[in-house]
Amino acid sequence: MTKKPAYEELEQKVKELEKEAADYRQTVEALRKTLDYLENLLNYANTPIIAWDPDCIIRRFNRAFEHLTGRKASEVLGTCIDTLFPEDQRDQAMAHIVRINSGERREALEIPILGADETVRTVLWNSAILYAQNGKTAVAAIAQGQDITERKEAQAASENLNRELIKESEERKRLSKRLIELLEKDRQRITRELHDHVGQTLTTLKMDLEMIRRGIRPTDSSLKERVKNATDKVIQSIKEIKDVAQGLRPSILDNLGLVPAVRALLDEFKHLMDIEIHFFTQGLPERFEPKKELAIYRIIQEAMTNILKHAKATEVFVNLVKNNGMISLSIEDDGIGFDQKKVTAVPGGRDRMGLMIIRERVIQLGGEFSIESRIGGGTHLLAEIPF
Ligand SMILES: Nc1ncnc2c1ncn2[C@@H]1O[C@H](COP(=O)(O)OP(=O)(O)O)[C@@H](O)[C@H]1O
Ligand SMILES: [Mg+2]
Image (cartoon, rainbow, N blue to C red; front, side, top):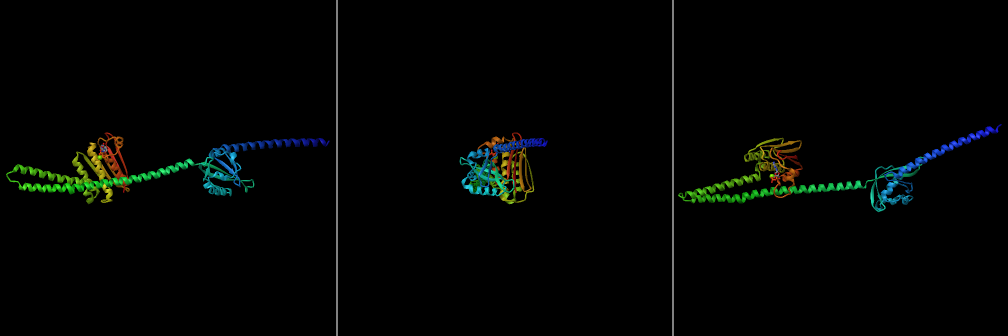
């Protein structure tokens, strides 16, 4: 009588155990699947992942890491991590590893990695420590890297390029300064020569002629007339030379400053062509840096000469304004305009230097220059110069 219940009880127990075992198997199976999944994830992740134990022995080395280094996981697993670093930076890299091992969490740490072919790649690392269940004993360190070699190289290249560009632009500035100095010197030399040599010669020639005239017999009126004509021509030449010399070195600029000098210049152009010139100026101090005054004067002079020579304009607007620490100079005509591409494409030479020199003058003063021109649509020059 007592045997049956005991037997049934036992059977019941066995059933329960069997169920427990099945549950257990299921859990193990699920765990295994999860592990496989994680394993795959780690292995096939496309960022290099490595794990090492507290003795710095490599325990994990995924495919991306194989790809990064050109080494097989089978070669490196079980070896010390230090062989992954280039020799000259090994101590430094190992110092990082030791600090990671001691529990320091490092983010975006740059450690170079040595490839099987001896190439060194720059890798940015994030790392973490894996602890045992007690939460205290470190069992492994895991790190995930990002190969930034190309990025670093591109960055270095762009820094290099930048440095070169700066050097080039400094060189350009130096050259353009030199060019403008030469130009002004040339003008000064011509002015001086005109005055000293040709001017003097003409003056003595004039005196000679006057003496001859006085010596001519009063009856010889035709000769007297011819000598008078010659004298007039000489006087005219002396005046012309004076004018040219003045155009070359505007003494009005030195004496009265930029705005009156520009007014006088524009008046001269008004006499040379049948054109309306509107000049507007505002905010400029009476005197400022002579170099800037001269540059602006020359730019207006060249631009107006271009209008005289090329534009066939009927109206010109010249604006010269100082505002917010900038001098802005704008010269706009309603003439025939030109094709900027064609004109700027003309390689250097003695001709067609005007616009280039304007640009150089503006750059020289740290400013910016632009031209807008369209065939049939007039021309607009704009220079912005820091004051
Ligand atoms: N205001 C303008 N209107 C029409 N064409 C112009 C004007 N300014 C310049 N150009 C054109 O641009 C060219 C280059 O000007 P520039 O460099 O001063 O050289 P250049 O005056 O010696 O020809 C000129 O030959 C002309 O064709
Ligand atoms: Mg010109």
